[in-house]
Image (tube, rainbow, N blue to C red):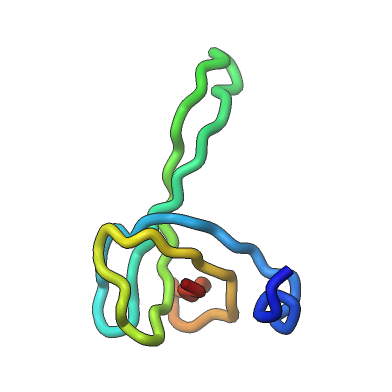
Amino acid sequence: MSTETASRGARKVRKGVVSSKMGAKSVVVAVSYRERHPIYGKIVTRTKKYHAHDEEDTAKVGDNVTIMETRPLSATKRWRIVK
């Protein structure tokens, strides 16, 4: 467990790709995961988008990032970029 995770409590962490920049210090991160279809049994790839806060405003479209759950920062942002 990293020191940042320990000091911030048990928070959800996801890895994904920056799919768009919304404005100053805001990005959309697409997180993909694979799961088995409940009826047909085929493995399908699902993607979920998270609005994240980028304090340093350094992330660009296509970057691989790690995001962590945080308090609500705006109407839609509940995640922040860790690295």
